[in-house]
Image 1 (cartoon, rainbow, N blue to C red):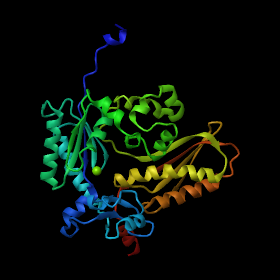
Image 2 (cartoon, protein in one colour):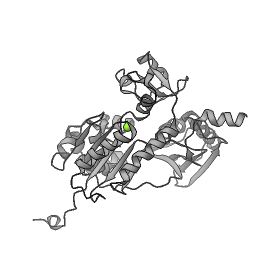
Image 3 (cartoon, rainbow, N blue to C red):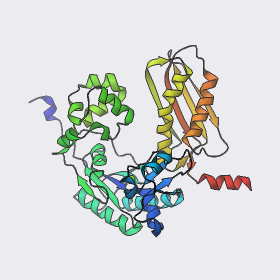
Image 4 (cartoon, rainbow, N blue to C red):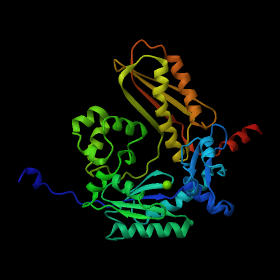
Length: 365
Ligand SMILES: [Mg+2]
């Protein structure tokens, strides 16, 4: 017997991931009977608009969130666009968080409509996490008239994967016994934490499923995916030791990337900053937050770094505006004397999201 076997085993955690079904779209259908049974997209109907959420009727046509409105309309000509009402979504989000709080203080929201709960030690002394998940789903339905799906498992990654399995209005459990096999069968592009760019990179490396990922040694994953390497190595085995971190007030939302080869041209910088802008914007949209200040961080080949900011008078209303501000900042910095090894984008001066039209209206008075 090796020494490792003598260590005290960690107690198995009980994690629930709760996810409202087609949240914004379901709220709109709840509040407007005319929209029920119809393909609905919440979001901008304008030329550059993007779908923030799609009803299940719309999803049948291939419409999904983050899709350009024009594309969505082409896929589904009968699609009804509805303006988002973030104040309503936030109020409902508060209602569901109050329900969660009856069971545990360990609540980590991912967005307005999703949260992780650690119920290992829960306030009601309920033994089975599945029972808690069913109670929560029933209470959400009763309180809000909306359905939620839940995933129950022994870590965050698997709980998140599980909640997607029986959508809408479903529950799925992944036990320690069937966790590893569940991951092996899953396509990596479905993994939480594997975005489109990473999925594409994995595809090029011949990694399509959990089984493929598991076959790659840790040094290989670190070499190709940097600090995400150990995370990928773990989840391929159904291991994820990340704790459920209770909500904290965010002061800024940022993303950055270190490049494999240093960047010298403005065009390269613009290309490489794009995905970072999208990441930051998606987070802000998903959480109903708006910011007024964009900061770009540039780290040079010699590890010296600078940050430059631009602020707007009104909350920034689109990814395009963030892009414009980043572009202005980068234009001032290029051409560069030294190569750029890292770029970062941060949105700060955050506030709760408000419909932009209202703000403009007020200013025009
Ligand atoms: Mg959802």
